[in-house]
Length: 82
Image (cartoon, rainbow, N blue to C red):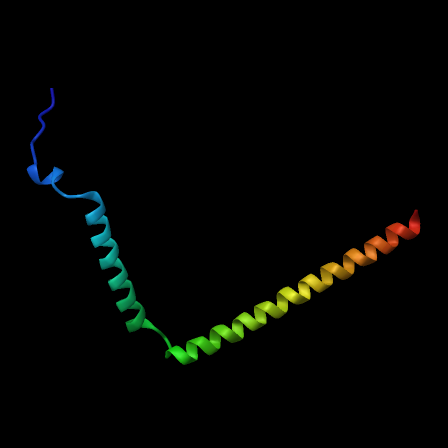
């Protein structure tokens, strides 16, 4: 038979309160580390993100246009062969 030791502090902590305290501490540490280790100022970072988003948007638009053109060519070819 195993020996179970009684720890009175173990049952007294509330799960939600402890979780929220840990979550808050994690958010504070994350924000502090983000501010301290950011490679650029905010305005520079925003410009870089906007430029990269624009480039990604252009790639998506180009891919969709190519797809639509290929589908139209396939439909023309399929309708012509019938």
